[in-house]
Image 1: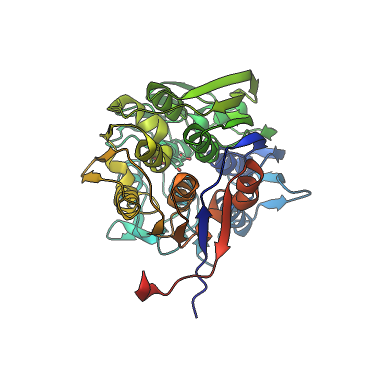
Image 2: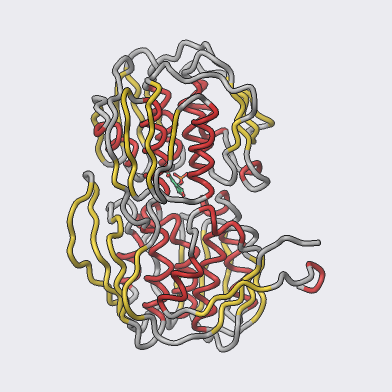
Amino acid sequence: MSTRLDWISHPAGALRGELRVPGDKSISHRALMLAALAEGRSCIEGFLEGEDTRATAAVLQQLGVRITAPADGVRMIDGAGLRGLRASAQPLDCGNAGTGMRLLAGLLAGQSFDSTLVGDASLSRRPMRRVIDPLTAMGARIDSSDGLPPLHIHGGRNLRGATIDTPVASAQVKSSILLAGLYAEGTTEVREPQPTRDYTERMLAAFGWPITFGPGWARLEGGHRLRAADVRVPGDFSSAAFFIVAACVTPGSDLVLREVGLNPRRTGLLDTLRAMGADIAIERLGEQGGEPVGDLRVRHAPLRGIEIPVVHVADMIDECPVLFVAAASAQGRTVLRGAAELRVKESDRIAVMAAGLRRLGIAVEERPDGAAIEGGALRGGEVDSAGDHRCAMSFAVAGLVADAPVHIRDCANVATSFPGFLDTARAAGMAVTAAPATDEAAA
Ligand code: S3P
């Protein structure tokens, strides 16, 4: 019997009112890890109660860190100090989370003991050479199965600082190297082909580690200490993105999203949608724990297709699936290039979104590093999210403006990043319901 969870997204009217999205996933992972290595007690508020971030918390507990959850979205962490983690006899399960596994690989490379990192079926297919190679250059020893998880990380290595030019623009890779750099002798410097989100850098500074950084580079030295700090996590822009696009494409919509993290390395979608004609205003822009945070007011406006500037891609890498839906609802052709990384996310997001939108009547030309999408009238139908949370939620937005319900297969993994999505969507005016899974063969 199948335990697969499917959804049906029904056509619905305008999105109105205001809502909040769960805490930022990237910041929640990092706050746990740095607090675990710090001296003293840290408190995280606004923590994402998702499966990915809970998996990271469980791994750190297995490594001997005391973490308690006095309330939903709150974690108290008694830091073990840089050298205070303990070996785990059991493999460390990162679940679906690439961020968890790649960052932990860097953190564990500097320990005195061996560890094994494992993940679910999707994570077990994701490339790890991008962290194994630079960590090895720093003196780490990591065994993998041909560059794929599980990762067996040998302890007791003396890491050396190095200057690393990363071949892919990846905050996960950069962060993994910086975390290993905490344990390395001398200076570790990372240079990226395109600037990526700088949360690790900002948070290391907040936990008292001397670090210098700018767009596309970061430098630190080993041999310092982390001091406990309190972290208030803003709303996750990537979760807000589904509602931003939903309000853009649904006539009559006027929706406010409260307290969304607006780090400029995350908001490429805003620039892109505005270039397509969207009406999005930032209200009450402020700062929370060193991060820009604001309310977004999104009103419906007709979108037109554009050639998306490649410079925006790294700043909206997780928003590309829902951008496919915006492009499908726009007038004319939208072309996305320079986004080959989408093929190695939780699924091959170019293939999954192209296949799904075609089933809904949209002409999509798939390319190795992106797609050309012809805007048109979305039909109802059945699509497969391939177990990818962001594709599932993107198809839910497609169902909102399709002419008949959209049945979305394999949506359980939405819990990795957006627990409570169905309730939030309902409150905003969408009509997405859980559905009995259809027969594999019938789809
Ligand atoms: C993340 C970085 C991005 C992003 C992921 C979270 C992070 O991955 O896709 O969801 O927290 O560092 P890459 O940096 O590998 O592109």
